[in-house]
Image 1 (cartoon, rainbow, N blue to C red):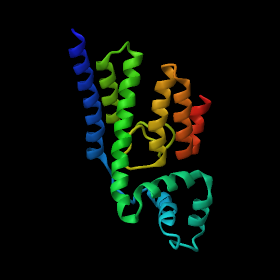
Image 2 (cartoon, rainbow, N blue to C red):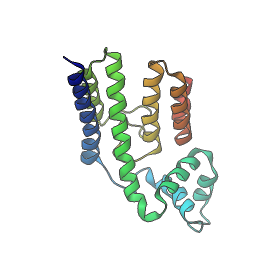
Image 3 (cartoon, helix red, strand yellow):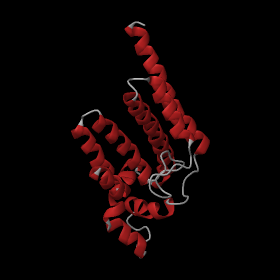
Image 4 (tube, rainbow, N blue to C red):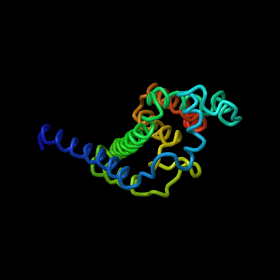
Length: 192
């Protein structure tokens, strides 16, 4: 095979991995305002409107607490308004699943001597196993609704890939970013 056909074959697999992320999101997306969103939305909405639930203890503690503070700031700055939250959550769910699919593809391809078929098979398996959980109910390997832990898992998977490739600085940087989004998962990765 010449290098031009190798290049095209790699891109076919990369496009397929991206399609896996898109398809699993379309097929399994649970929506907005469900499950853990009940505890994540009040601090986000408070960042968007200072008068939102001004006397609510949970909202006040969450806005000032370190655990969700940066995630709430990140989401509120990206959305800009309450009306954009639904679309932003859907878009970030797509991007998270695509990122998980691509990181699985690249990491597996690296482990199996640049075998793109192994990479795409692993990507398909990870995205088809809806019950595979890393740490309890909220950090599945792919996401059916947006959670800070799912965004952190996407960064952690890329960090694992870059550390395995020998790029320790990029791996540590991605672990640090995941720690800002979800302090517990990011720190767990950093200790590994």
